[in-house]
Image (cartoon, rainbow, N blue to C red; front, side, top):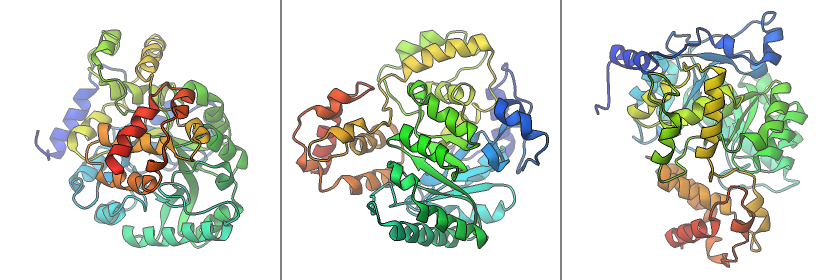
Length: 416
């Protein structure tokens, strides 16, 4: 397939991808009930509204986000063409996600950010307070604030802008980090200086408790949880708490391949999507938007095939009967995927983080062009993998039934 296509061909392909389906004429139609009651009296913030995209209010920010978020972590050092991001924006994508830990991503997309000023919402993230290599401990509040502030300034410089819409803390896994006053105070100072508007976090581990704590704090505007159809039921109380708190929700780590023989599930979808042919990945994302109560989904994109696949999802609308059928099958399809609960980390007698090993394994097995992400995971794992006793405790406690001892052994063989 050609690595570049014209705007007309691109938009045409996106339109054909949803032919025969129902359409969301406006993203407002998808807004949750708790938001709809106040929406008429509030001014919504629109950017880059296009007929080839559906939009949704991003919590209390009032920003109408495209339901597809462009994950720009792969656009670094030639890791993906900038034309990819440009075509996403032309198709109506208006939310771009990047971060300091994604080496070179911010600087790489800076030319497009400058050219698209006023059209897009930018989220970036500070690392090392959580993922990839947590550098703070309880009580090191001043250091956490310094890390947040320094990285925000670095992000502004790399992106070539004086303002970022939302600056998050990357990879939070501890409730005490969520509650840290110094972090919020650092954000408030930056907001007063006009550098940032909203505060957020992304979480890969201990997701339920991190999200519940964030909802109770009243401080967070946008949260990006690792979640998939198989973990939605367990996270439902946290999702509802965040929705009630007015937090904008963007799911990530949703569509990674889980089962080797995907064909066994294809028969379950015969006739479900009318004239459309949706992949397992598209089905999972459609479920998250319609039943998972997410405002948008974030996808790490490095090629035009991935972009086209993603653009087909936001405009899909399904009947209640179709959604019921989808729910019963897509959750089965997600069986065996990590729930990001951190239970495995808590039982390891030597303090190893099996979830980090699983993340490295996932990047290796299921993602294309993810060398930078693997390198970050490798940094977090080096020096501790050889301590594994192969006791099997992590596998015994895993809620998803993942053979974690085998995953750890595989990664250990790669790194030690």
